[in-house]
Image 1 (cartoon, rainbow, N blue to C red):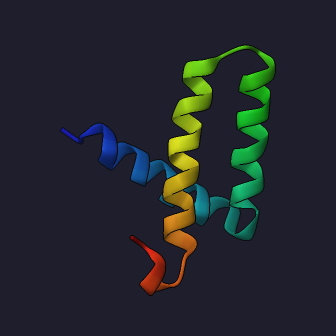
Image 2 (tube, rainbow, N blue to C red):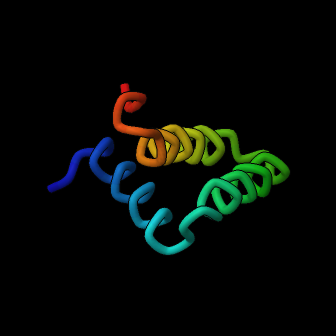
Length: 64
């Protein structure tokens, strides 16, 4: 069984594979949609995905 952290890294990785350079835009759109719906928990979850996506896209020295 995967941990929540592993699942979130998996989501970020999948988004990067599926959407490439557009992945951050897709995540931002999702966060905006959830925010407009008043879904604070959803926003928090997708912000965690966004953070991981940034780490995956960063040069190796910046993945801390």
